[in-house]
Image (cartoon, rainbow, N blue to C red):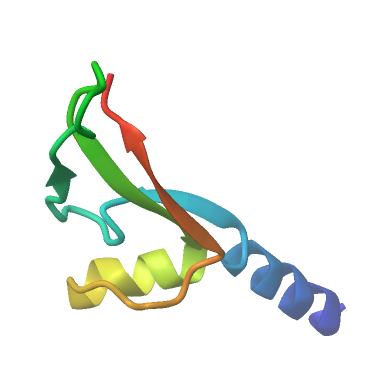
Length: 74
């Protein structure tokens, strides 16, 4: 039973979470792409829930994520 709880806890900490700007509460607006009608763009990362929680505590971005990209603000 203890092994099941351990595996479940690790699994929960590995759930991907979308975080805008790489770390919680960061500011990262980028200008629109030239020649488009887009608005400001924002960088985002999909990272494990455990990493996001650590970033909340230490207030900085850790370079560990599943994937990242940019998206237009709507």
